[in-house]
Each structure stands twice: as structure tokens, then as C-alpha cells.
Amino acid sequence: MMFENKQTPESRPLPPQFTEAEYEKRTKALHDNLARLKLAEATLYAESPQMVKSTKRKKEFFTTFLIREVGRYIAYLVKTWAGCLKHFLFVGSIHPVQIFPVFIFASIGSAILGILLLWCIAARLPSKRLRKLIFGKPDKGAMTMFDAIGIEQVEAAKRALSRPIRERQEAQQRKVFNLDIAKFLCQLSSLMYQPESGHTLEMMEKIRHKKGSKKRKGFLKRQSSHWESGLTETTLGVDDPAGVISQVFDATQAALMVKEFAKDRRDSKISAFCRKFQIEYEPVSELNSSSAAFSSVFWDRKSNWIVVAFKGTGPTDFAEWVTDLDYHLIEGGSWLKGFGRVHSGFSERIFPRSVKHLGGRRPYDTISAAVSMVADDLKKNGLGEINVWMTGHSLGTAIASLAYARAVMGKNDFGKQVMVRDAYLFATPIICDVPSVHAFNWAMFKNMDKPRTMWRVTNRNDVVANGLPEAGDRPDIVNTDNLFCFAHLGTEIKLPDAVDKPVYVTGNHITQGIPVEIKSEFDDYALMDHRETNKMPQDWTQNIPLLGNGTAHAIDNYWNALSKVKNCYCRWVDD
Image 1 (cartoon, helix red, strand yellow):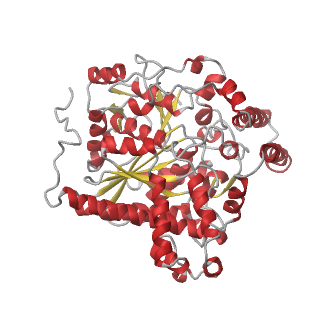
Image 2 (cartoon, rainbow, N blue to C red):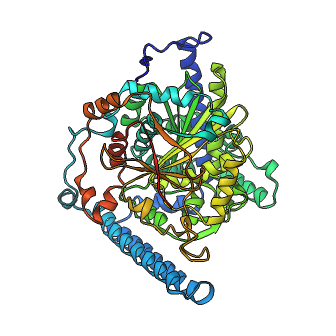
């Protein structure tokens, strides 16, 4: 039965201690502080070789772009197949059962990336007519994902996001996948695709050429030398944005730069969505990337929850596709204690091994500082602990998985009275090796007084979620020394392709066989009404073999699949 509480944003009562004007004042000050935080990160990162190269690429010719991307693909092939040869000669088993999967996965990965290279080249063709011929003309009147969710659905999700964590005994008896939260976070993950990184890169270029650049370069050099010498107490970081900014800009320059960075949150679609559902948004980190990857925070200024969202792979960004399909693993490092090896491309986005050119700080520092800032503001509402949730799609889920693991395993990274809750991740690729999975699971189990779950949501045979070598999920079949013995983190929810089909669950993150309930505030009739009222066009290409594995990855198709889910208990996949 559906709950009767259907308050709209306009009718929701305000906590008595603040007027609307006071909320406005608090929120404006918070946005300004978060913009300063991003300016501090941009100041620290502006001189990194990666960012310097990226601004130069904006003016490059098509032939330059073509040569670079083809070279990137050749480098991938050399790295992948040389790794296979090295593994067979010096490390791996010569048993056919071990050799066959390695060649299969290397061949599939090489072929998929070759097709994606052609796709990305087509998207950058100089001729607009050719691009329209290949990709078609967008239908501006077509319904989008953002039209497919109503106020009452978002309000139900908000109420779920704000509730306190369940008691330990209840969590041991069953796990709950909240459908309202999943739908709302799927929407936020889709929103992350709207902004482009171009504005931030332009701002970094301005910072490099700003008057007083010698002073800034001297400051960054001192930062790096302090970090290399282990003098972290004298290294100003993004958790002290005022200190970083004051070392580089005067008061007038700083005010102008903060105003410029505030433009990052003015994307028309994101602004319209946030106004409609009365939530706040701020981009906080570029994730050590010159591509379109970035992280943002969403929150309700009158509640007690924060969502940290990570942008996924840009459909035509070949560098990000190479990162997704790169099989190279590196040591997890001190930031993920107990972890073995993790995916190098994902790890470098959030926990780069060297921060010499980053002012001694990592993107995770920016994110944790941003969450702490928002949490400190929300604590004034007097609504108890602040709930922090994480989400993302594709590449975003991979980075979110590592950030979530650190947040769970760390000690008060986000400050006191802040509770890390569940993660809802859509189309998550392989992340790490088997020892890392054990370390993560142990960290979750030993904190059972704070029961939480990393939900890994999968649509059909999504190529990113299922098409990569995941032998580490089944170490009983493939030797853990195998080159492609990678594994996922979290519990997988396999979405159905039709309303009347069951939802399956698998993974070793929670006890095998424990009841997993999919639950919404709305009954099945209301869910059906939502589905029919805001019906999205169905992507028939998902039914085509091989091609469907790629189109199933689209965030719109994840939304369509979520819309087919009813209140139910999941069936466990018999591993």
C-alpha cells in the first residue's frame, strides 16, 4: 500500500529555527566556499603536465587528433598483448584452461576498442553533414530521462535518503534495495553527463597565465618539495582553500576567479532539474583528468543527506574508453589498506600514486573536504547524523567504488556525525584483484553495527559490466595468478528485461542466501502508473546480439530497466 505522505517541495514544513531567507544566506555562502575549494584544486593542478597538454589540444587539427588516438590504440594493443606474452613466459600456467580465457578476453577487448575508436573518430569529423549522416539529427521534442520522474517520486527518495541507518539485527535478517533511491540516483548519474570540462580547463589556462604566475609557480614548487620531504604539516591542501588561494591571488583576483568557477553549476538542464526538485548541486573535482570526468555533490539544504556523484565515460571520449578497457593493475597503496592490486586507470583518477605536480594533494582530498563542508552546514538543521550516499555510471562507478571503499575503511574522512550509507552504482566494470575483494568485504563485515551495502546494478549483458574479464568473481574456476583474474566489488542486482521477470542477485559482499528485498514507498499499482505516465522510448537495439551488449550500457536503458522493477524479493544466482 502506498504511503499517504505526499508532500511536495512547496508544502514541506521548514525546521522552525530557520527562515527561508536564512536558508538562502547559508546556501549561498556554502556554494561560494565550494567554488573556492574547486579553485584551490585547479590552482594546485594547473601546472600538471596532463592539464597543460589538454588545453593545447583544444586548438588541434583533426589530423593531429586522429594520429594521437590511433597511437593510443596501438599503445593499448602493445601493452595488452605484451602483457599476455610476459604472463605466459614468466608467471602463468600453461594449462589450456588458464591460457584460453586470456586470449579470448584480450581479443575481445582489442576488437571492442577498435570499434569504439572508429565511433569516436566519426564524432570528431570536420564535416557536420557527415556527422549528422552517421549519428542522425537529435529530436529536440523527444522525451528525456529528466521528464520521466515526478515530484512525488523524488520526495519519496528524499525521505528514504534522510532516514537513519537500520539496526544491526534487522540488517542481518535481510537486505533492502530501495527502489526509490535507486531511481533518483540513476537520474543524478545521468545529470552528470550534462556539463563539459571545457570551462574548467579554460580556467586552468587563465590561472597559468595570470599576472603573478611566477609567485604561483614558486608556491607550487614549495608544495611539491614539502610533500616529497614528508613535511605534510607545511603543505597547504584543498582542505585549506583560503590558504592556497591567498598564496597565489590577491583579494580582487580571488573574488573574480570564484565567480568564474560558480558558472560550472549553471548548466541549464542541471539547474532546471535542481530547481524543480529543490536540491542543490556543486561540481567539486576534475578527478586528475583532462577529459570530461568529474565529481559533484548534491544535497537538500533543509534535510540531512548528501549524494556524491561521479561522471561516467563520455560516449565519444576515446581516452576514457581506453581507461575502461585497460587491464593493468597496480598496488592499492596506503589509501586502501589491505587491498592488493587495483585497476590503474581508475585508481589514478582518485588516488594518483604521484602528487608531485598536484600540489601534494589527491582528488579524494577535494571530495572529502567538500562533503565535510556540506555536512557541517546541514548539521545546523538539527536532524541528526548526516547520511552520505555515492552513485555513478560506467567509469563513474569504478571511481565511486574506490572512493566508497576508502570512505568505509577510513576513519572520519568526512568528519564527525557523518554516516557513510549505501552506494548505488550503475554499469560497474571490474575494479581489482581477489585479495582486494576480501579486504573490502572484511571492512564491511566488521562494521555490522553500521550495516550498509554497495549495490552494483546491471542491465542485461552490458559490455562494461559483464564483457570484461571477471575471472576473479569465480576464483574457484580460474587460478588467481591468471592475468585476467579481475573482480568486482559489491552485490550485483541484475535488472529484468520485462515487467513480469524476476530480479536476480549475486556477489559475495553479503551472505549468500540472505533475503534481498526490493522495496518502494509506492505499491505495484503506483509503480505501474509511474511507468505508463512517464514512459520512455524503448531501445530495441538491446535485442540485437553483440550490438545490444553495447547499447545496454546507456544510462537511459538503465532507467527503463529500473522502471520495470516491482516490489519483490530477489532470486539468488546459483553460483
